[in-house]
Length: 160
Image 1 (cartoon, rainbow, N blue to C red):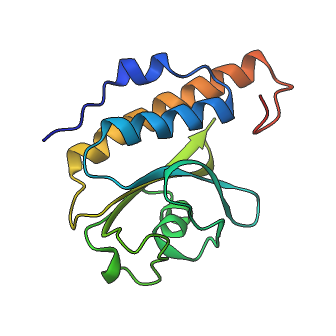
Image 2: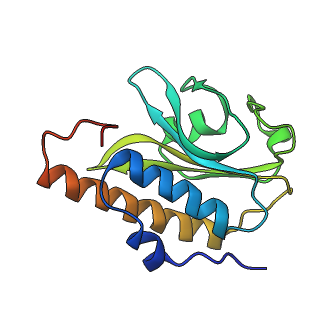
């Protein structure tokens, strides 16, 4: 089975407002990607990553930059694919059913602002094609938010 994601369809759901966009983005991926049990964002608050919009079971509220796959992807600023989270040093268990994970850094105007986190109950669920597709999707999200920020410079992070 392949992912049913369409980047043009996803882009049409985005308006450039942080909260609306990360919410729709998470919901769209949760609906269109097969074999995932959690998808959402952790955003940088200046001292740690904080849970933002997501789909799935309740999750960890805060993640230190030095912990887990999300902390690793954020501090290294690189997409991280983990075939078996139980083999990843420092993995944070939010849902015991999650077995593999992909975390993509989220940049706005060349500044890292958080990560997109996607979990699956299957070992080795994520492929290089998934990585390429989701990196493009996050790039579209970043562009929408950046464009809106330029049009509305008084827009405060997280406000509608």
